[in-house]
Every structure is written in structure tokens, then in C-alpha cells.
Image (cartoon, rainbow, N blue to C red):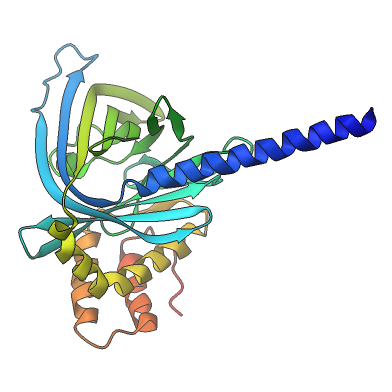
Length: 312
């Protein structure tokens, strides 16, 4: 009887392990399905406010050609880079999304360009994927963890995350300082959908005041790969530099301490400085060791005085 019970327990364990392996493979496929050349439409609209005399802002609509591709792929990590294609020749490095399986290290946005480290319990993230979203300069933006769902022919992932103001508003508004985001990524027949249900929040003295709710509907419609050929060529030339930028940031994140970034130094935002440095370093014989040292020097200027990068 004991032998039969042991065999049954072993069989259940094996079946569970196989199911988990199959589920993870489906997760990975869904993440990689976001890669390709896309016609993107960005749509945002404020929908409701609890404030009686709130003045609703105009809807926002924009479009772009965007190339999404993996720059790193390991057992429990997939890194996807986005590049904007402007006209026939101009490329703009856009946002980046890292996907980590059963990740326990999170940087949560607080407010005022400050992110606080948060350690998660491994039991709470079992089977989940963390999406870490980074700015165009590869600095932090927002992070959330949740389970990919595959049901009724659908594959989607959704999580809540606090974030800084979006680029479309951060230079135009100062009446709120946190966007409480609810992100949903769904793989579709045409490509994928990034759906958002956001709250625009004023966070002061530990209290949150919601100014308005916002709906976001961003569609990524696949188009011919050759439309993004210029982006692939651009990345081949710039890949080494941005790999070094990521390495420098990773050193900072490994400290697991609060990260605070200045909005401007000498009236310039960080991504402008890193883009200038990119062109300078790539105009000469590129050396990774030298590049990392200069990248650290630039980023260090934007960090709170208590955050120090090693300059070795």
C-alpha cells in the first residue's frame, strides 16, 4: 500500500513538473510574440474624475513605426528592446522591457523620480513573470509581477505598477506626480495590444489623491520586416554601447538601495547626455572599459549624492 502511494505521489509530481514546464514554454512564446516590425497607434483619454470642477485634458493620439527585438535571452530572462523608425533613415532608441521568471527583486516607483527596492517572497511569485520597464536612457521606470494567462485561445498578462508621469505629460503638467498603472499585454491576431487603466495621483505626505482615471489603448500591428531593416542596421552599430549602459545601471540596481535621479543637470535630461556620449564614443575605436567609465561619470551626475558608482 505504501509502495502504491509513493508511486502515485511520484506520478503527480512528474505530471505537475511537466505541466509547469509546458506553461512556462507558452509564457516564453507569448513574450517573444511581441517581437517584430509594427505600425503602432497610441491612444489615451481621461475618462472620469472624482473632483467636481476638474478640467479634463484633451485626448492624446499618436503613431509610429517600431521595431521590437530580443537583445538577451536566458533560461529565466528575456530582454526586448524597442526602436522607433522615423522616415527612411532616422532611428530613436525607445523603451525597453525585461521579463524575469519568478523574480524576487523589485524596484517600486515612489514619487519625484525616486524608486525604492522591494524584496518579494519567492512563494508569492511562483510561476509569475516580472516585467521591468526602462526609460530610453535605460534608467528605471516601472516594474510589476503577474502570471501569464493562456485560456480560450487568448494569451495575456496584467499587473499594477506605480510609475512616473509619461513623456507625453511630464513636461506639461505638475498637478500630479504618480501614475498608478494597470497594464495588460495581450497577444492578438494582428500583433499585440498594450491596454492600460491608469489613475493620475497626487502623492503628498503619505496620502494619495486621485485626480482622474485614464484609458490607454496602444495597438502593435505587424507589418513587413523590411520596413524596419534600417533599425536592425542601426542596432548592429550601437549595440555594444547600450550593452555597456545596461551594465552600469545593473551595478546600481544590485545595490538594492533607493535610487533617486535628478530630472536635469545643467538644464539637460539624462538621455540627451547619454545620446551625445554615444555618438562621441562610436566615432572612435570603441573600447568597452573606457565606455563604461565615461557612462558611469555621466550617470553619476544625475544620482542622489548617497548613490555612488565605482569608477574602476
